[in-house]
Length: 407
Ligand code: NIG
Ligand code: FE
Image (cartoon, rainbow, N blue to C red; front, top):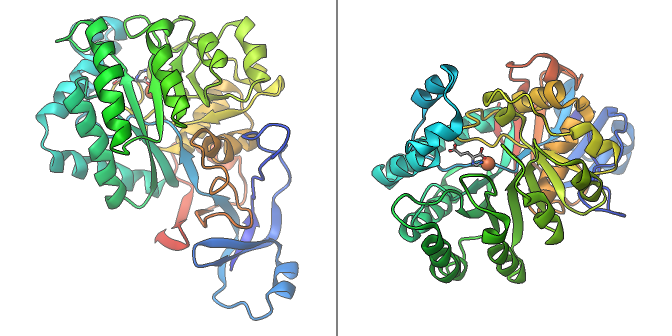
């Protein structure tokens, strides 16, 4: 049993899944009971003690916040190296697109990945996953997209399978095959290879939980990515789309037509798409660390989406180009400051709503009976301390599947 100030973050099961219930007060002097790796009971301590008179092994959080583990539903791990030199160029005024044109950007990460032996990549990523565990990430998405050839995309997806066995977190594996046109192939040939070789091979090998694509100037158009998304959902995989990040290309409209699970970024979301998004089953996955790192003044209309009834998830977008930030607490602070979320909305956005984006909302994302015991203890009972003390790590202890792994 863990005793403290419990923030359960309950799931709304109707009418639309993926939306957290309106913020409810935390249970002060509350408790959760865990048996093996599953949550058995949640409530006021006196009720729990009455229900479980013989309960032993009480762990006292001394009134501090007890939260569900954070779910980072959008990262670009595994990558092999940083790109701080490109960051310096951007600080000096170069545009991301110019750097990408000069074989920097995604193509550069692809070269770095190809040149790095697999055991070096996995040890680099293990260290980053360890960092993320310290700041409370207990589940994360990883994806391909830095392979840019059939062989190297498959290698990146297999590295994710290796990492699954090596890190403490639960991993969801996404194929981001249409990320950037490979420099050595024509774009039409690459799309053809993705459709006829890469996607079927990755699916047959069981490497995929989801499929994503990057709709952007310099990346791919809605019509180029459409049939891959259709195929993936016909094969019962979740679909996602990077849309409206740096410009407006029609990705959101297509994503809504196809009822994708998540539309990610949305900095340039059009007013006419907003209403439709807010009343759809698609979650807006907002990535404030990318907006911040890219010094974007255009912001996604997060408040409007939430106020119109839409579901919002927040994630890091952890990657060496546009978002080199791995901390969910810091990302929550950025979401509160840049996108005007409340601390409670930010908490739902990195727990239950993010779990829904990954198709895991029945297993994780809240402290509810029957869910996996992924639990965080903070060093405070005040949720607002997370955004308020930006840069401070408020996570004191981390439990994954019923086992303390930090603290
Ligand atoms: O989410 N948008 C596309 N992909 C990444 C950037 C990847 C990179 O620069 O390496 C993103 O921002
Ligand atoms: Fe991304």
